[in-house]
Image (cartoon, rainbow, N blue to C red; front, side, top):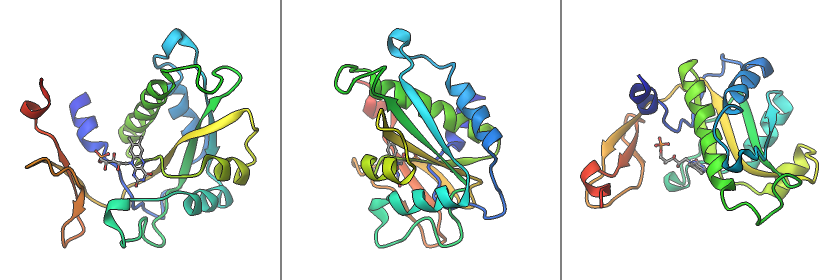
Length: 192
Ligand SMILES: Cc1cc2nc3c(=O)[nH]c(=O)nc-3n(C[C@H](O)[C@H](O)[C@H](O)COP(=O)(O)O)c2cc1C
């Protein structure tokens, strides 16, 4: 059921070191996202796949994880993602500032990829905390593509669970056993 998949599709920040991800597996996920809706059917997104050790090490160093849990460092040493997808905007198809729905397209594509990954027993984290310039430079991405959102992927080896948000406190946190807990606003609190 789609609901089960969505509940399972949490942001994971620790991954099994034994589960590698191939470029073909990532291509399959992007092929699914390719069929998603896009405003004006413009399809302005391009994808840079990182599966090599070198690319993954660069992406690990250029992304920031779980700011709310500082000083905890995530992913833990030896539990880094096995792959990354850098979702880029093609500046020729969607010049900066001309497409007010660009962010919507990115969100749709990102969630589609994460759900497809979850269905395959993978998981990961959307990452927005990075410098687009630094990522583009490190991965030698052509200047016409602007990194907008990063998806980290792997086989999660941590537990993340949802709970109802009380008193408006939406901060995610970890319990002593390391379980990651994610408060979500209650249904009655989001209907206006
Ligand atoms: C657009 C976007 C950007 C995000 N950027 C980061 C990030 O830079 N680092 C991080 O650790 N998590 C990031 N996250 C993950 C959120 O922290 C996460 O979605 C939130 O805590 C709720 O947890 P859940 O995904 O399990 O529901 C991002 C999520 C989204 C949707």
